[in-house]
Amino acid sequence: MALTPTKPIPLGFQPPAFSLLNVISEKKITYDDIRGEKGTLVMFICNHCPYVVHVIDELVSIGKEYMPKGIGMVAINSNDVEKYPADSPAKMIVFAKEKKFPFVYLYDKTQEVAKAYDAACTPDFNLFDRENKCVYRGQLDSSRPGNDTPVNGADLRRALDQVLRGKAVPEKQIPSTGCNIKWK
Image (tube, rainbow, N blue to C red; front, side, top):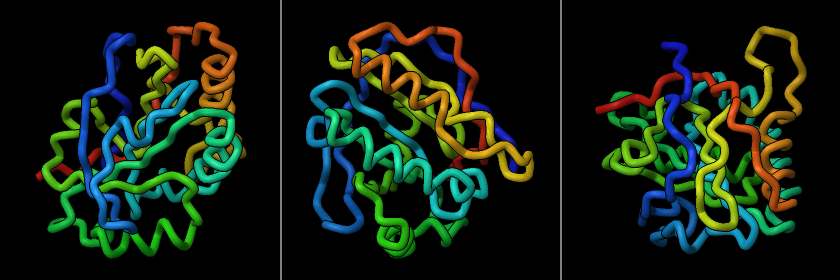
């Protein structure tokens, strides 16, 4: 596992379009399908990464809290499942059901969506405001496996609250860190 941060790219970009398989419904889902009225969170995660496993319950809590407020959410797995079978679509279904994901979990088989979003790690977050401008690419919070800091989603929650209020999200953001995306 290589500790990798989110890439520092300029904010303000529009969300790259996608059409990916929802592993549970077996239907293609697009950005427009999950777009929220007040904002949209696109997360790159996987099943096996210890950083994702460490925070997944908080991500589910955030989904349950913020989706009813008008935030669209989606989780995307872009890992190479041939080399990392723990991230296969069949295991994605088990993970999503076990954790009771309130958001859809999509499989990026070609890895083109991860590349389009400049995703680098799991978890990697892209928060878009109601005008579809990316306003946040930071961390969930300062908790990491083994650092004894509680997982509370503080950084992402602050950004989500600002988006809900229609206020600017500070541009100074601490990058998320986690396992690198497993490229083919």
